[in-house]
Image (cartoon, rainbow, N blue to C red; front, side, top):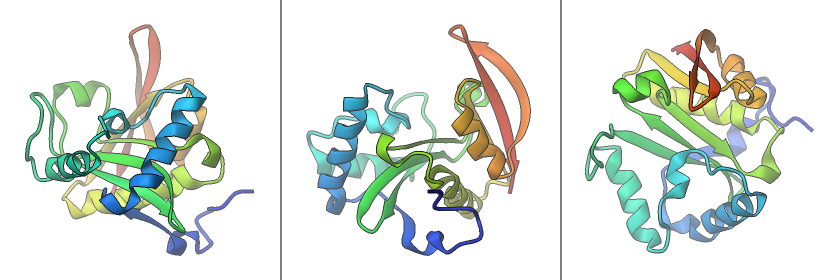
Length: 181
């Protein structure tokens, strides 16, 4: 069953939130599900050590203001997608591009927990994140994905993404899409 087609009001019940300690159990449940699937955790921030959950949340929220950024990183805002209290996915918005991100990585990385895929959540999450991109002053957003990730490319295209180019990194073909806001 597809939950979001752009015309219903799913957007009213599904929201993006900044990382917060109230969702610790949900976050750990989502990570556990992802790890059981043996799939790569995407976006990369899901790989942060969550042993000290409060510290992890502080770190993620600090990065949106440029506080405590690791060398070579740019300011980024992380959001979690929540539906009726259930954590569905995560999305990272990089506020600007450095050379590495301009090549591969782009402004946005996102992922939906395995049990909630193919329900329209990624399309909605990206749509909501693009509104956040506008708030931080971006007018054009680069998103990259593996060419083999058909679901991700469809999500980007559904949100106005235009294929700019393809390239190869580590033996894998990836695509570069731009979305004008």
